[in-house]
Image (cartoon, rainbow, N blue to C red; front, side, top):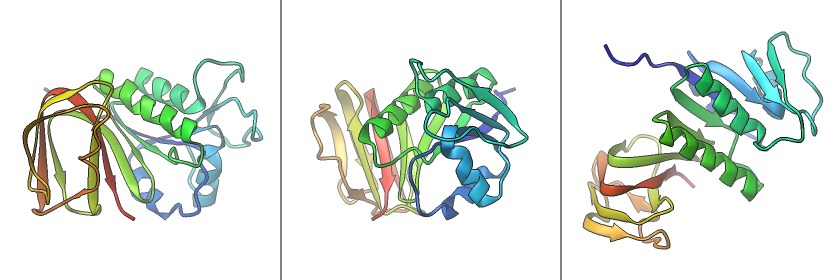
Length: 209
């Protein structure tokens, strides 16, 4: 028997004007809100299962659900605490919404939360209205369904033996350094693209304008 898939969604507090894309990711998932992310649930008339935050920049919520209040003087962000709590509760398929925002430092910190999950063999991605970000290694298949572009970059170290098949710009067994960006804004030629990496890991971003 394989490992049971336990799905969770974490809603962070990055500013957003369009929340309509949220609904497809909430169905059948345990809902955790990071601090002011709970306000998005209020806007969508959806009750979260758990709220975690220090509430230093937003009022403490008056919602009848589980609440974990953090000390504002802490080492990790509210979203990071949500990720760690989700993993601690056995969730192994995590979608993080509302975590790509106007603060680049906050966004990068949330990307590191995806790396944190990858290192623990937990499936995780960041999603907003225009982008989907994940960390991948080995062989990855991406499908031409809702995104026009795909880009990827070596994460921290060189990637060796990288191949792309089914794209406008294919590669065959190429090494890519962390400073290289020639794998940006590729497009689908076939209905699906296969990315193969012999050694290393990438940040994979699917995107639309």
